Length: 364
Ligand code: NAD
Image (cartoon, rainbow, N blue to C red):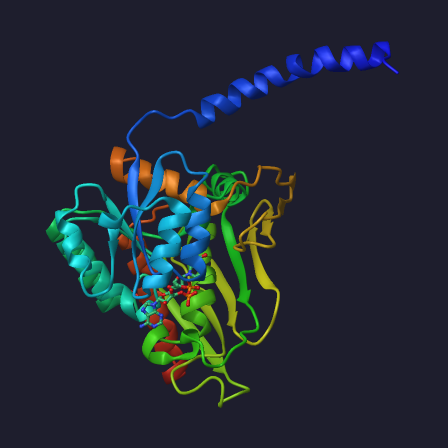
């Protein structure tokens, strides 16, 4: 039965929706330049990025680089990728002659990042590279130099740097609302399965949990505290030497010291599930994110209350923001360039050194 209430509901719904619609349109209509991206490495994260990019307004998936012809044809069908934009690992240097691709997003095992990034740079295309940017700081420096020489941008896939609750904590800290940062705790870990996967192969991963998941705590400590560490101590523990062979870390606890006297205490592990938490203690309050780095929604609170910023698909926002950085020179709140990736690699090098020597390592 139609009632007056039904009628009012019907006419008021569009009225109520109007301001939101306007806001939605302002946010979603974009007629500027679009970053045309080829994804290299059509694995599980590459697939996630490709799906997310459907929501991006400023970045578009236009090409693929893969060693598996069947994957190429299925991606072509799924994303409407022309034959001319498909490459394999042997011939992708030819991308140099392709005016329809602006950037290559490298989403392959860690050990391949450096050489692939250098080849992409030499082909004159911007490089977006997954974390960890490389296996160590020396490799990271080579990548930065190659991109500089080629005049292309180098960005690292730090999707949390665009996540709204994360950015809110950083804003509160930067604006002094939390007071001076004193202590950070980062817990990053999951129980890894299949022992034959590349993540547990030192040649392809360059290490273990620290390279893969612990890097979130390394990176998070820096943006939550807002300083660069000056010393590192670290301890490694291993319960399964069969699964976690020499050079593949299962669990590492590490501590960082910052110039202001602030400290961080972090856990990186492949042996425990559900570890994804950041906690910042500051003179006037605290901030907590849990989960802090998963695909979201991220949840967070501070001494002032719950964080209520909306969740957007991380990789969609990341690609829009990266398009703005590359095409329009936008400066992100938290850097995502090669130098940022290198800072994490220097700390990772120091953590491995501290594990090995049992000594405190000083960072310059
Ligand atoms: P994956 O194993 O699912 O995919 C890797 C892809 O690389 C596969 O398509 C594989 O065929 C290809 N590949 C090319 N050469 C290879 C070789 N020599 N050996 C093995 N595979 C080869 O891995 P993934 O989870 O997609 O991870 C890829 C990268 O993305 C890693 O650097 C990882 O750290 C990063 N990653 C980032 C996030 C994030 O949230 N930012 C999440 C997951 C993975």
